[in-house]
Length: 119
Image (cartoon, rainbow, N blue to C red; front, side, top):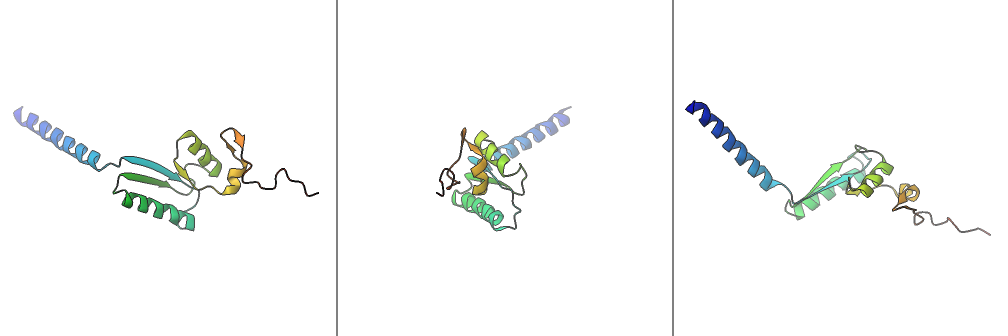
């Protein structure tokens, strides 16, 4: 009985120490960066470089999880998830922003010729 209790106590101590170490290494801030392109594209490489730079310059206090290749949906879905707070960073094309409703209003900023007449 005593031997079994010792093994259980040892396992619990190892688990507690492991949990404490993993908690000490966790970042203070975690962000999600989603985009629709594969990692080999220039924008995909930029996202990975952004992640590396932020994590390095923050000494690991900030963590960026990059979700490439439309893992969470297309550009419109990524914009909606940013608005809902499910995704923190995205790089959708400006043409997609033009047709999305941003904060309840349709964005006119990306359509410079809307409302102008030629004559």
